[in-house]
Length: 174
Image 1 (cartoon, one colour):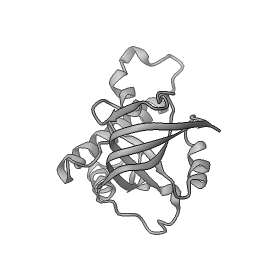
Image 2 (tube, helix red, strand yellow):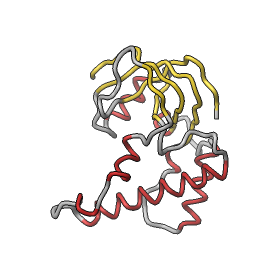
Image 3 (cartoon, helix red, strand yellow):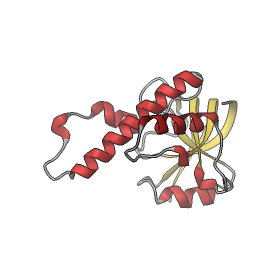
Image 4 (cartoon, one colour):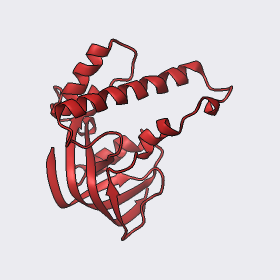
């Protein structure tokens, strides 16, 4: 965990929710990723939804709950995956964008001035496959420790969680 003040980060805005010049407080409400699970209801599954998709989303939810439980045990001051903002640093921005542009549908990059707390983690510890819960807790502890797996020089493996205050400075579509 590291405190930052007016540090520049970037965010891929999937919900088109950032207005230039406006200040946002991150960490009080669910982020769009976790809000999906809070809004889910049994009637929201369409008849065309494959059971494999339902299982995958269920496993992601279980993973997120385990990671939140472990975060609270390790250090409750770390940014929660439930209400954080995922940000990208200035360094190697183009390479990071090339990676993330294939992972999510957003094509809007927002430049932010951030004051608050960040946590750097290796996203390879985030496994969404059915396996035993002790292993999932072990992986969560590794994630929250900030440890990077071997060959960690691959910049696409680092993710940065942020909570605090952000001001949207500029936005670009790509």
